[in-house]
Length: 43
Length: 503
Image (cartoon, rainbow over all chains, first blue to last red; front, top):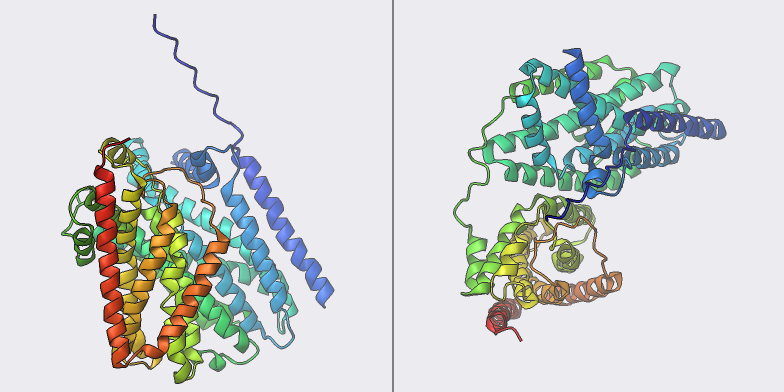
């Protein structure tokens, strides 16, 4: 009797392009607001 | 066509975002987003520090545009998995039921999208803070972001074209070498450029090292003139450069067959010297393998070549401002840099993409003996890295105002010192170089590194006064003889050890 092959481990399905684009959008927003604050403080 | 382009775009973007973490097998984190975050923060810090009423709009824009362009350019040279990606793309596209044009459109869209995503992150902070400089109007910020993308496209596209040309002329190995050299030059140039130009930011362009001509040769300066002074001629120049680049990219799209991939040439002089030093038997095999892979492994080159860029930059800066008397001492210390870097090089030696050569060493008699690996690595590093680097540096002594003979004498003594430093550094190798495919950065002993730096730097300064005279020449020849004898003996001892029957 041959042993039953092990099932493949489930691949992580946490990769989502949409979520990554949201993260980038928030990042861009932060890189807009931070300099705006700095500008306001400097002038 | 739209659906095919979207599908390809999606596949490539997934690889951009998640490819690195998936290959490493550590879950679904995105590497691209973290890279954008880090670069954006760096750009913000630099942009805030440069806000100063004495720094004009053009200088401010030029400095920040240079930073963002260099950052994106470095990203374009960093791809270690280039060749694998190209093969996967060819398989994907040649089996897909889409016309050639669709593939080209998808490629262009993906390149533009990736570049824009990366550049916007670094361009936003200075684009907003430029409003603090004189003569800025609200549209200045928008123009700034647009030209930042254009500059980044010029540099990244130029590097891509150069790599592609090297690929067509000499194969993927040459292409990886060109990308590594471009990275080292960019790092060195950026370091030297920022260090020397920062002092001249509050003056006119003529105060820069190299003057107006040097500035005009650097496209971010054209862009800065367009942004801050509204000079449309420079905008036109930028546009023309982009068109020329696109045209060249279109012309170079045709694929080359894989006939020449991995072709072997005649062994060069350094490889023959390595084989001669190793003598016959298993040491020769270990040495020639390590020596060949030193130049071949794209991963090693991508990690190690940039390390050599910074010392080059320091040397360039130091050249500017030293009296001739100090020059020989400085030169003596600079010649020790390859030896100082050796522990870092050795730390990266065990790794290679694939790692399938490990089986050869495991199955050959005595092949996995660490003494064999150490002797091979020592001879390979000496003949393939230290010898050419020190020979070039010694011959370049004229740039420091030293006679070439003095430079070569110092190089000979430095080579002997480098052999000693390498012999100590390779003791940490447990197995054959270039056989492990774990992608982890090994721990590096900082204490050992610092001790080595101090000792070697001191030795370099101490031997510097010897250069030029007859005692120096005698010392140089003696040092070379000692190094030769030491290498031959190490190889012989390792060969004997490997042929002992296992206990």
